[in-house]
Structures are given as structure tokens and as C-alpha cells.
Length: 351
Image (cartoon, rainbow, N blue to C red; front, side, top):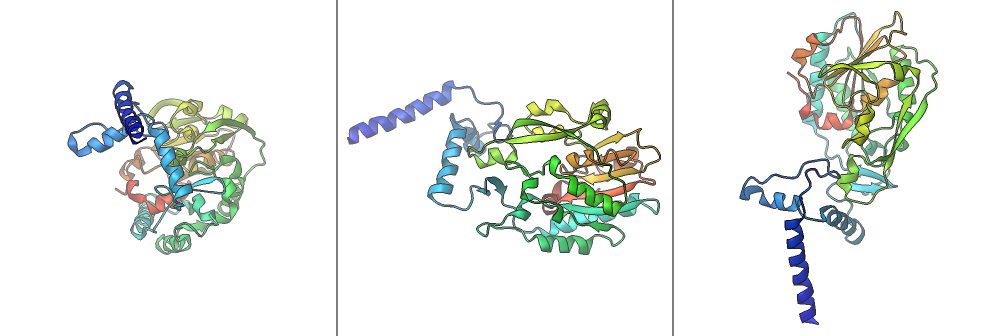
């Protein structure tokens, strides 16, 4: 029996060795949304070898299942599942990061805005805010909001949108909120900012194979989400200008459905500055949103309310270049950042 076990084990080792030699390496690890490590000498050989192991995803899934179901760990590398939703641990509160983003918001207000502007800020909660489990580490969101409100200038009015959302407002496998559940958020913004939000009917179009960012990180066999985008005559006819791309582009970039991150379908996805002008809104005001990716689907719901909507993402452009692309005079300005970005603001350019 010992002999048979040794032969089987040796056969497994040799078989895996041969398979790793003859099997072409993946150029992109789709589930993890990254390229495999490149060989740069002995310093990174372990990462290089692991990324090129055959059945890598299957081994990752087996490890995750074993950790969560046999060892009864609360998470697998910070990822866990609760009530069918995949979460990522966001902990602890990074006070330095929160203060940094508050300082950038104050700087932008003082540098670019004047009496002609109406200015607000809001915070988009991540779905961990609505987690009802006591088994996992949860960031102190009340303290985060206290710090934000304490550090952002009193000249900028706060709009609370936390109570307009719940866990169902978010994708199960992704960090982001769902566009079709954002009407209460738009209504809250309308009530405070004083713009009219017309009653408009939308058609739901969808993609039923949306594997969000947490799907690959969890390494578990989680069913995909249905990605929804809202369509009407306005969204079909209007076009987006992108400071990084020539020409005019659709509100929804359907080519992104075949990309690594289909959530980029909304308003050109990650981009420094995008803008939409709606000729049907005559005599209206302009809106500038300083944002992260949470604002992309929400901004579409505001296109009927403003003459133009401009999204500015300071992760991709420095403030010193804004005068070349954005007209702030007389515009409504909304700073809308997620709790995740407040807690990890190193990517936001402040100079």
C-alpha cells in the first residue's frame, strides 16, 4: 500500500511538472483581472511560478473553500460571503487618508470656485455599511463621516445619501452600486441641490454574465450578476466627449461588456474628464462632479436636469490642468467620493 501511495504521489508530481512545461501560460489572469508576474530573476521566481501553474484557478477555489468551510475562517484573504453577497474587508479607518482627501476638496473649492458656484459634497457608502454580521471587521463609518464633516469647509454643504440605499442597491460580486436602484439617490440630490428631476421612463437592458471585481478575488464559484443599464431616447441620442479620446462616444460603451470590467460601460468608464451636453435643456445650469467610478451610472440619471454634466476624476489628471478642460464659472459643483476612496486616497492627485 505504501508503495502504491508513493507511486501515485510521484506520478502526480511528474504529471504536474510535464503539464506546466507543455501548457502555454495565460497572458492574462481573467478571474484576478491582472497579468501574471514576469520573471525578473530569483527575487520573484515564486510569484512567477505560481502565476503559471496549470489549474491555478481550481487550486485557488479549493483553498478558498477549505479555508471558509473546513477551517471555518471568517474570510479568505479579506474576502468573504454573507447572505449571497461577496464582501471585501475594509479595515481599519485610515485617518490620514480621509484627511488628505478632505484637504484636496477644500483646495479645489478655494482654487477653482467662487460666488457664482453652488457647491455640495456627498459620500457614496460601500456595501459593507449595510453588512449586518458581527463576525467580520467593519470600518467605523460613523467616525469616518465625523472626520469628513469636521475637515471639509463649512462653505460646502453636505448631502447625506446613506439612508437612500440598502444592500440590494449593490452587485453581489462587485463593490459598486446598481444603476437601477439609484433613483432615491438622484431624488435626494434633486431635493437639496434644487434641480428638477423629470419623471422619465427607462428601458432596462442587461448583460447576465457580469463577474464583478470580488468574483475573482474570492476564488469561489459564485453565480454572476446581471449588469443593468437604463436606456431612453435621451441616452440613445446624446454623446460623450472624452478628454483622452477624439470624437464623440455613446453614453453606454457596449464594447466594455467583453472587457475585463464590464462596469466600465457607463460614461466611458475610468477617464480623467468626460462631458455630456443636452441641447434639450435650454437655459439650464451646468453640473461638474468630482468623482470616482460610483458617479458614472448615477450621472446618467441627471442628464435630463442639466444643460451639461462633466465628470472629473483626479486619479487620472492633476488639478493644475483643469482650467484647460473645465469651465467652472456659474456651474453647480458636487464632490461625490466613495467611502473606499476616502479610506484609500493615495491615488487622488492633489497637485
